[in-house]
Length: 252
Ligand SMILES: NC(=O)C1=CN([C@@H]2O[C@H](COP(=O)(O)OP(=O)(O)OC[C@H]3O[C@@H](n4cnc5c(N)ncnc54)[C@H](OP(=O)(O)O)[C@@H]3O)[C@@H](O)[C@H]2O)C=CC1
Ligand SMILES: O=C([O-])CC(=O)C(=O)O
Image (tube, rainbow, N blue to C red; front, side, top):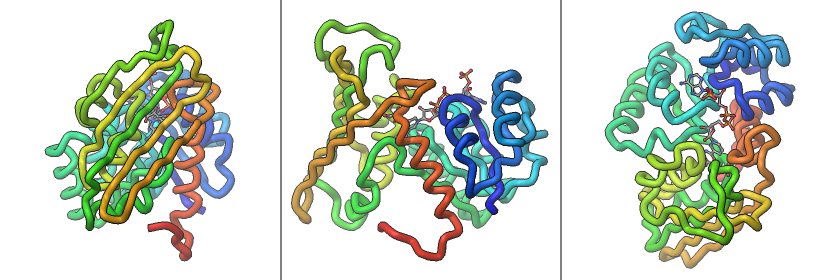
């Protein structure tokens, strides 16, 4: 059974811990002591608020479900320790210099940086963009205003521009756009909307290329403990872990 170290004991951390059937969470880390302890008790792991002590534990992969900042701070050390890392806060990799450095470290160590599909679908075949670049790659995300900590009386566009700029302003809400761009091989265009009538986190994807065109709409149920995060994102990372050692690999 694959042993994981969980970095981040919030909403996704809890969903992982309570569904840890095909994985063993051996250690959990959070900056908030109470959170690490509560989560550790749920999955019979050991709690840490000291990163170096956490890294002494027995696991082969770190699952990051914390923040863009956490990826920036800890991911190189994870790779250099000889472990893979699964990164949910993919927005950290929007910074070209940081991403290229991290990839170089992973290459040097023979380790992997794994980005789950998270709250979106279609990353598998959007990778064809790495061979034949899309002429259009647009993500329109619509969330309830409360999930961004704001109020609105009508549908309102709060950002229009490139993913690498959007993630700087909304690091807890638009990691999907960066993951999309990493899959398709170019920065995605983003429209971020809040809509008081929205009950779900909606991601619409418009893609065109020499293959034809794609429209995908995902209407995600918000997570119980963090409405900004779609429940599917937690299921996605659980699925990535379940399949890590599966000899049958489905999807591009
Ligand atoms: N790729 C994708 O499709 C998606 C990505 N995400 C991203 O996944 C991540 C996890 O989501 P979720 O569980 O809902 O978030 P939560 O805020 O519920 O949980 C994150 C936890 O990690 C802690 N944390 C944050 N920074 C650090 C750090 N530097 N070191 C240690 N602990 C830290 C937080 O503490 P504190 O509260 O004090 O900050 C919190 O306890 C978020 O970054 C989110 O934006 C979410 C949905 C989709
Ligand atoms: O969960 C979602 O719908 C998207 C999200 O928060 C993110 O990409 O950061």
